[in-house]
Figure 1 (spheres, each protein chain N blue to C red):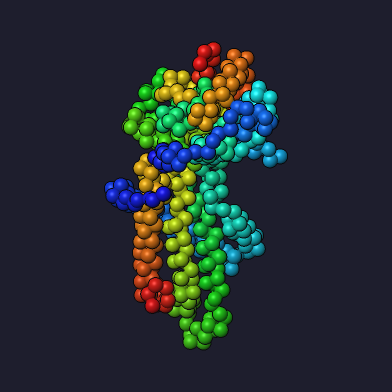
Figure 2: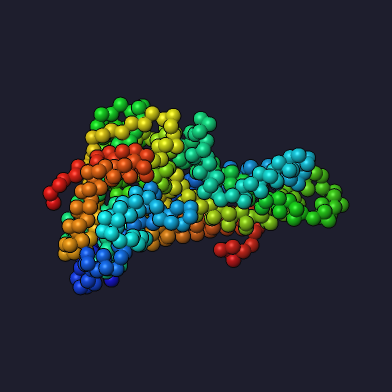
Length: 225
Length: 264
């Protein structure tokens, strides 16, 4: 059976799909920064906290890295209403991805903390730096360089992961693609276009993150060599 | 999906089809091969001990009994129902096979086995008397992404909001939890899931958008088999076996029961 591609029927929905892409980016952006802030707290807690705090955070990380995000969001969306908390589709999906990211981002940032060697701190002390100077010129640049690449690839993962939203009523890129494909049956064309949009989104994210990394944190590698 | 189906029907019809087994062949072989959907509970699905069970399976057993043969269940997904008949892999095809002109050109249908009533499942919080009253900005219709009815309802009820979720269970749960107000679909297939929410005051708005009839598919021109099945199904209907079996599996009466007709 010969299938004839008809991209016209798919392209006319491009503005609708791009609107969905914006929503995907929005979910990824909020989940990433929220997760990064929570993760920073978590990493601090594990490295410098008292045992009870450390154990609590480790339990959180174990729970959230060992259950699928799709299940965590299901819980937020469909189980919480049973105790009277009704979150909107968008809130449940963004919050779910944020809580999930927090666990991963805590681990990434913890690895960054641990990458600062005692000898470097000793060297700073020898040079006569005070605590603030040590933080500013030794610790932060070091951590930033160590964790920037895994952080940016995690952001890309989040952009793609936001497609989970389609299962819970969020009209993001994948959800809208399914809507259009259902009505005009041009599924292959629609998903080809959507794949290109996702690639464009993640490339743009990688490139801009790469630029920031290069100029602010002097990170080498990535897309900008 | 519909276009794909039509295309495959036309191709199958033009290929010159395998000869269907006649009534005599079936009786002498001792088995009736019945196509049922393996993923359509409680119509038919695999039980925990890996056997097919459900409404269709019970009815298939009764029909085989009427023919004096044993039943051989063949798993057929929705899009395989007609091709499997045409290529003589099965003798009869079940699985909520909606009677349409397009299909009738390729296969034959028995008298209706059950109906598919597109109606409204809602709660007592909604006062609407008809599905048409739901065309309002403070109503949220819950549906499944990929359902044919999504576009249909958007056209008929443009002012209502839409929440698209993943499964039948999710749609019912969403209404129970107050995320949405109503489901307009073939609600017979949704009723079983309302049992999970006994505290919700469920309400069915009985004015139907339309009622479709699902018969049993038979190879075109296999008249001997078709006639025997029609008589057997008249008996199943008039003895209330169909309705009782429906209630047993769906936990509710068929919204629009089939009225048995003695003449075909």
